[in-house]
Image (cartoon, rainbow, N blue to C red; front, side, top):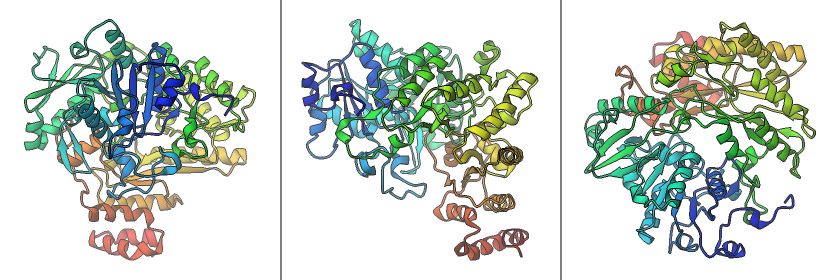
Length: 604
């Protein structure tokens, strides 16, 4: 294993702790994922961050929450606190399909074995720790907690639930990317400040029995008010989303019963030095040796990929990235990126092909406002919808430089872009002609040199009314990008595929909209494969529209397919080309009074 020793990973058992000669542990982390010591896995990032602060850290991956709780007892009590992370993926998305059917595998578990984590591990793990060790603080983090920090709609129980601090009983919640808040927490604890007195760390949330609101605080409608009035929940969401995407955000307060959830504003975006420090930690980049001989699909997918930035300013209505990472881009230095790529070239099973040089969106590296003062006053969730912001510096030159430097490294045969590309950034005509030229060059180099046979893009729909609800650009832009893609392929003698992603049953989408989607994509010679039925996830604009029936920004009513029958009626249009769907699609179009589309779909 590249000359690595077991002690190169953080310890996971009492035996591994003793092998280090430790007689105490400062922080014990519990994770819903297998322990992969890689910067794409949150528990590893937090563990290595704490280790770099001089702490003794252990990880208990996928503890058995049934029976006698031995996994929760085996390492004893930490000196500072327990940390709980449900895993890199929301447990309910991990467990269930959009139709609420139980999935048969888990990509974050050895050999895809299902049943290795509970539903809502954030709640289950924390409740167990509080039952066993009521006096030891528990810090909750990760995507699941991040999206549930305030009153939220739970699709799987089909009800509004209070902020996760209520059910989990955790002492502190860290939302978003956790390096900065966890370091600040440790710094204060090491100065002797009692845990219960630490209330003002940015990017944290906690429960209080009484809080005196400050003039700049945002006081949301209470959980109980939201239960009675869906309009109040919709109005709340607008405040939450805007504060998640502001440079200088306000503190948010929400009453739940006789308690108040206090959400402190986030840290400013990480500086280059701060994000480099996180990615440069001494990860082994491999699963723990205990998994030898087993495959972990989530790791296999990213083992030869490099994340070059965090954040996304797309603001898509159905996406959780802005709620978790924010819209401001935090980019790594070229030196840090090249250092990681060089590490990968030294891995014994690396064959010379990088699977991805990307991020939440592939082509947002180093993009930010030209005038930071304008950004500081902005509260829009998207910098590119409904129009591209004039203050946005969307220069692709730094990204081209990264691609070229990486490709020059010894041991690199090809570097591919596996992350989704925002083609609206490539097609937009900026006032600065240098940016337009860089976008054209980037587009051609991307298609000619960095596609591993298939390029993923996400138009998501064809109909303008649906796309407006999604906060996505018009479908004509996809058509323009496809023409460029086809032209570059022809010039280069390539036979690559453009793979578009589409969503059915999104709020604002009707059966007729899906029928139009089927016709338009058929006319472009697509038989769709990358498709999904909309799954409401907490803390997204689309989910609030789905649950409340209102658009949180306009308070206008929005139609949404809610029943299983309504969802399947929309989904079937993805498969118009399959004989088994022809009869029911014909009946649906006749019922909708859209016989005009029958000929276009079935050549009548």
